[in-house]
Length: 64
Image 1: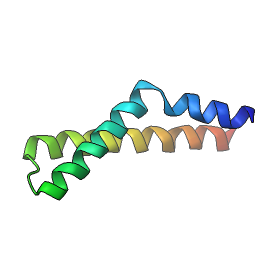
Image 2 (image 1 turned 90 degrees about the vertical axis):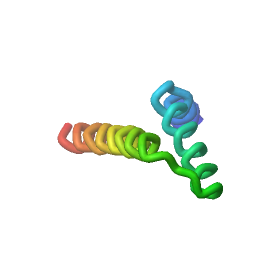
Image 3 (image 1 turned 60 degrees about the horizontal axis):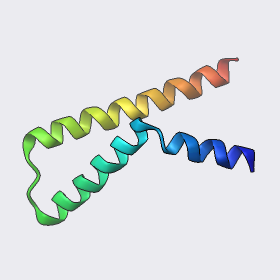
């Protein structure tokens, strides 16, 4: 139960909320067929940052 609460707390971080909001916006714009190039660049940068950060965190946990 404690692990679940910790994961939920991490999900509610600002970084995660921004990533989720951008992903929902990306999905809506994709359905409408109107994705501005600037949005696509920003979305790609945010998603890349998020997954690289997660990958680095996992690497740190494995090496310890």
